Image 1 (spheres, helix red, strand yellow):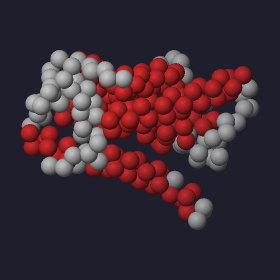
Image 2 (image 1 turned 60 degrees about the vertical axis):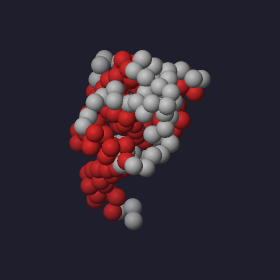
Image 3 (image 1 turned 120 degrees about the horizontal axis):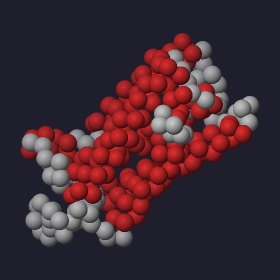
Image 4 (image 1 turned 90 degrees about the vertical axis):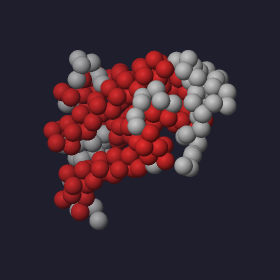
Length: 215
């Protein structure tokens, strides 16, 4: 089985193939992915929140990412779905993504985490990917508009969820049959490629008539 930077690990398990149960580190590739996802997600959340406040101050304000009737951050921000829990959705990102970034910085500094910590990160990313999937559906089939900053948040949330799952399966924090584990580690790139491909396909088919006018 081939390995990649995302499969490399740093643990207290010495030369044993299985890492120590008490404290588990992470490979440099996975750590960089968490750091980049956390940083990009924080930037996206900050920009959306800032635009939301400006829109509250001035209902006629047009966010810079509102480019046309389809790519319209303003339409998204004015929708009921933009504050699903009673406050602007990106405020969740302003908490969650910096935490992700801090986890990565800790690993770069040599931190190891207990299995329960990794399961907590998995639960958080699971909530995140479930929430952005719901937002994707609402954007495409209810609101009828896309927000580019939201799309960035979707992208990094999916990546963080999947590769946290890969990490947890590799270290047997989440136990799966050996055949499934080997397949996940060998072909870890397949799921995100298909996932992003399906989203792009749904966007293209949803507004196919509009895209045809641009070519």
